[in-house]
Image (cartoon, rainbow, N blue to C red):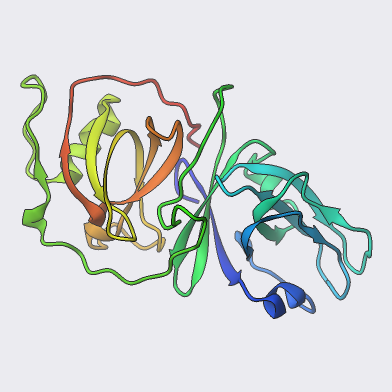
Length: 259
């Protein structure tokens, strides 16, 4: 598990037949692996344990990434386990996974494209205010976007004018690491999966490798975990999509819990 995040590698179930079969007849499931059910649009969701051989935690996730409620699916049990409100996703993992990571209702789940499936990033909630979350590969209509993108030329990532008290950096990675260490807000221009450029004030918390490889992996494959001040919630950004940045010289207090 990467510091600050629980990462669940998931098979992705999108079609009706995939939803119906789910994890039936599976005799085992590796730790921190599971299945993510994508329902296309928020709806009431109900599961049961028919033909299920292993006990499963299930988390029901809203369109904006909030874990609405958590349940347990028992092997061969026909009792319904339901979402407390209409949800876009359901996440099934081995029993005890969510408890082991300290995840409960009200925490966050963010979906990232991963090797023809999905990776779900689980983040603990600390603050008590209203929360919204935007997933890095989620379209505004809630559709999950799976696409391959080439890295932009490194020369396209440049530092916009910033507070003169902030050091100059050779690249965006050095700047982000400095912001993490010094708890400084960073303003980024970011190209979304659909090609739209947005500007966000972010509070960087950590940089992690979605493939769980060594640090020798090329930097532009890494993911930045932040608190997004515009969305008022945690968000993961693909660093290769940051096209410019500035550091306005404003400190922040961390709002998500690091393991």
